[in-house]
Image 1: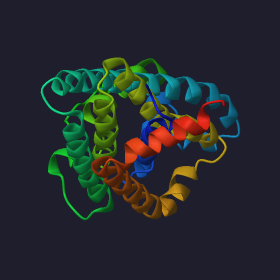
Image 2: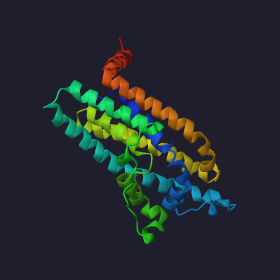
Image 3: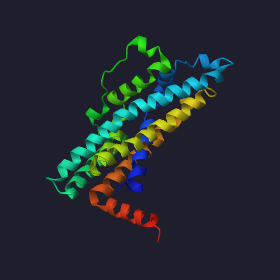
Image 4: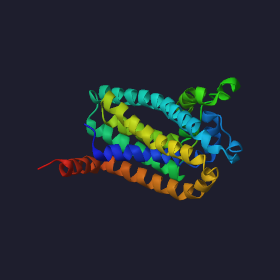
Length: 244
């Protein structure tokens, strides 16, 4: 059963992925790619006519990477369910907590996790990239398969939570939540971009402090998991949300 704390933590991981230092500066490029609308075109007095293309492109883009992340969540939850048959659930929780602590430290920059900082060299054909909205879904799939720099630790933390659920369907639902945390801000920026072309640049000033905050929150989550306090917290929140 999904707990409020787990859903919230997974959503925050998705939000952290959106605010990652290597994601925000690339927003204009992503928006232009999925909508076929460039920042230069938005200076046109008729820029409001681009909103529908921006919305459609961003929705398809988010749908594309959501499909990939949900499949990863299914796999993480399913594999953990099998592993729980051979290993104590508490041992899995401790291992997962330590892993999440490392992911949080990687977000802050204290440690380096090379595997999570790499991106796969997936490239869409130039002909497809020029199609804007028509190719947005595939662009989202490529994003999900290749990740982006700085997103890896957040996604890994979300997948760890999915694995700790020990259920394939629950893991998939958690990755839907993660995708919402990453996708909803993207859609909001896409809608605002038609009126505020400078918005991505303005967001840059908040990236570093929010990244540090996200890293600290991730480390705290890992400590709670490793010590067993997370289980007590979710039980307490469940009692609060249960009618008496």
